[in-house]
Amino acid sequence: MPAGPFAMGSDAGEANEAPLRRVTLAAFRIDRLETTNAEFAAFVLVTGHRTSAEERGWGWVWTDRWRRVDGADWRHPHGPASTIAGLATHPVVQVSWHDARAYCAWRGKRLPSEAEWEKAARGAIQETGKENEALERAEVQRYPWGAASPRAAGMQRANYGSDACCRPDESDGHLTTAPVGSYPRGTSPYGVLDMAGNVWEWTEDWYHPAAYRSLPDLNPVMRAPSGEKVIRGGGWGNDAYGLRLTYRHMNDPSFSLDMVGIRCAADAEPPASRALP
Image 1 (cartoon, rainbow, N blue to C red):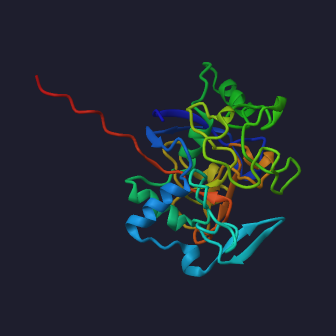
Image 2: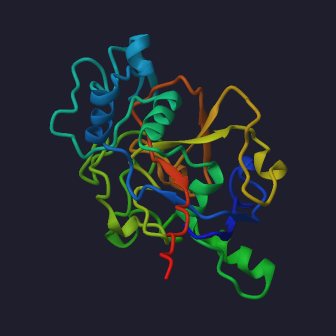
Image 3: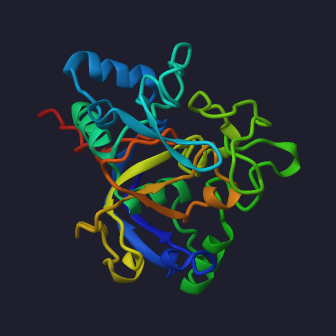
């Protein structure tokens, strides 16, 4: 992601998304795809990492509401009778913020800030020479791909639930998770996939409802502890409203859920050294 400004937030959404404003970020990198079960399995094999759900003995599972299920963990995402056999390319779930952070660190990366996540989903601000006009154009963009709803014109742009909130729906071919990158029509302006739907993604920021009003305009990250970490992007059980690119949600960093996964980021690579003549 190149350095520069983008439009962060929305004045047309929830109160915690406001205000819509111009924010500038340093260059950074972000994974094009969500972390898969196969990738997380490689991490566990090498490090012996035990996830929060495995240590605790249970995880949160979504049906018509969130339920605490004994034996739910990343290998058994919906409970002990479930499995990830045959789901190597599906996003890993039942990983806490602590697990996500450990995995990204093992890869030499980190979790994205909330602002970095939103820029990767939204793209750069479209300069018009008029500040208000550029922000107004950004407000029209509800999803990574634009303003159209996820199923507009019969084109599936994301893996998500029913259009009437909020339950799993297999009309897109997947009752829960889908293989990462399955919906190229939902690609963000920067070519990042699954930033709407499939699974929510942990970010570095602590959640504060007024963060967008208080954070600086340059490289903002909310580091003041609040008890909950920000998750972004919506998941397979959400309706279209929950997939909006400015929609903010949060969870206890120790929680593990079958609709929350990982996408890693990193600082931009340093310029390649030039050989001396």
